[in-house]
Length: 224
Image (cartoon, one colour):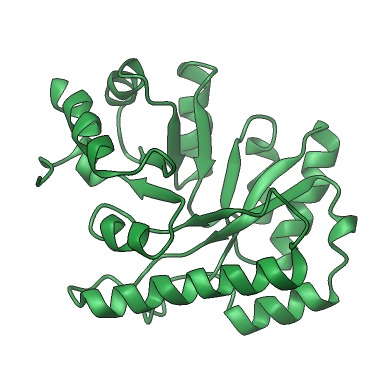
């Protein structure tokens, strides 16, 4: 499994230090995660609450866990005590659930607003216009235990790089709009999480500050 440590080293050579790499560890064994951990990497992303909680219990306490998959409100309580960031906040209902459970746990949870930028109907997230309307009518100060840190999105799974670039650019534009209208004085609102193994280079060119990489770390060799 030494390839995992080598893969992250090669990947970091291609990504600016200012961009955070979240290693997507869903369906990966504790041994694989530990190999990456031992190379110095700390940020890991999981899609499912059950798998995340199980790994949290057996892996080092200083791992920075990110929830990157769809989150149901009734499962928020299981991850609030330890989660570093919830990247997939896709509804006001979920935001309120996180705020409620975080209040009980005495924590403030960093969150990203997931925006649907892909043409695929299976992708979840806020419609950008819907999100703007929601924020216009939302008293952000009432969310005392939620820290909104930026936006997240997933591009269409396609070989059409121009479509992918256009979708990432639209997410970056939405980020700028939200920053100017609702978060201009908030230094926490600074993250754009976009880009995975197949499109992270385009995402970084379009302004990504967080990339979510699985296959290129745990799977096949990296092309240089």
